[in-house]
Image (tube, rainbow, N blue to C red; front, side):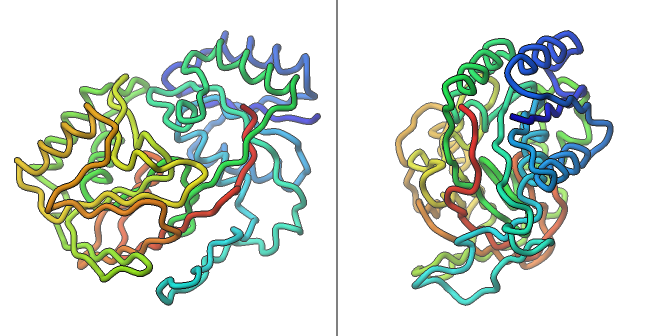
Length: 328
């Protein structure tokens, strides 16, 4: 088996020593190349080349941003199957990927993950230990026993996401954190950014129109889209928005049409303390949907897997079943 280990040396819990231990352990089972990322997008470029070169496995050692880049690189030349609207859906365009038919690049490499970030949402959702040493043992055991899992992904405006995406408040928070964080990202930093973004939204609070197949359009002020549960973590505490969402279901939508303090406090407290489905007159929630379209009255911030992509006035989200093989 040919494999590439992609290491982000800037991730929260990656170290040179840990990288060497991981590389040595992997090299005992696979023919391994190691690449340390030097710039934003480097992991994506490495993974894309790996897919084109017929590499069997790409292991991401870093945070959720590194994993997201690797996933987008692995699937960069693939047309996502099932991304077109299903029966009963609203009329929309079919997303296109650069490069055309996935048959042109052959089989997509499997993905391995050894967490090295602060949240590691995707890895934790798969049951991978947050400790890099323990996660390495899990990966080696899975390789030895030929154990893997197919997972569904989300696709939003040409960007693949593994666990969440969103428009509005959460993307504002991501943008603020990105400007202030160093290597270490803390729960306190996210809390401060959330409070500042709530009281001083950088782009205001333009209305968002939600369109889900089979439902009437709904106007909201912020929208969270999930590909699995938990939606994210605040330190060690899981945030549950759509508890029934998983890598085997469609997307989950959690949106609020009002952001008054009582509404926000109620839903944030519920998300942090219980795993039951939320209800409320200000809440718009859908589970297991194949597609979602969100139109904004004015440009709003847009994030995927905790990274700010930019500003958008329209984003179409698609659920893509069985998109990727993960070694777990």
